[in-house]
Amino acid sequence: MKFRSISTFVFIYFGTVLAFSPSVNAATFQTNFTQSLTGADASKGDIWLNSVTQDGTKFNNFSFINKVDILSNTPITNVEPGSTSTPGDKNNNTGAASTDKGDKASSPIAVSGLKDPTGAEIATFLGNKNLNNIIDTEDAGSFKMNLFFDSSIQKDNTGLDNLFFWERGMNSDLGIQAIDSTGKLIGTFLQLNRQDQKDAGYSIDTTEIDGAQEVGSWGVQLKQLGVTSLSGIQITTNANYNGPDFKVIARNGPAYYQAPPSPPKQVPEPNTAAALGLFAVGALRVVKKKSLVTA
Image 1: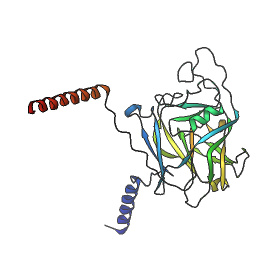
Image 2: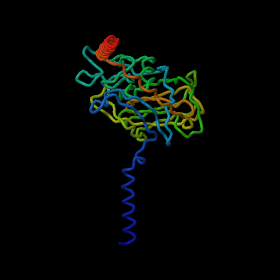
Image 3: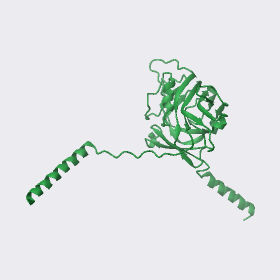
């Protein structure tokens, strides 16, 4: 065999190996989650964020959105009798950002549906670990919002991302810029582009769509925003961004992982407890009877 042929074979071989290597297809960060449902319903149920792994470091010390100031949000219009925010003949796709969840997922409050959401409602859907509680954006709409985290986010020397975004569909962009505690813009504007998303490893099927879509992710460091600390971010979109449907959290301080508490001990069902009680009473009577006979 000629050397050229051997080289070609080796190149093809290692190329094939790399193509199937998990490390090659790994996202900027790995999303570790637990799904409440299985099979075809997995994308419709709760998807709980457990932790994030990046560069071999697993952590779950997060800051969540706890306040939202809506600066602008294209309003929902033409709400006729019988219209709905769900797919179908009566579907109303006007407006811009609204709250959304998996078809069978839980949520702290009801989705906004055909009512323009309040800042408090958006904060509620972003401010939890359920990755199937998101903000849905209509393709032709636009918004500008200030999102505040529950703690200040500080730059460190870990090399890990500070902000983590998930976007349903992997087909939209999102504009972000850091803000201080008063909502003042600081640093530089950054556009998160759809082609830069990485596969997050799960899909979601929410009320405003009629099928499961893959979820992509972006990771952002504070230095990319030109700041060393921030209290929140201003997010923007317009018709050119193709309606981002997203979730965002932040890393809170140096990365660390805290294992969740052990599940509580299972309490016997009422019928089981009653049966055990009767058994105990019966056993006690037998013991007493034996004691009397012995006496």
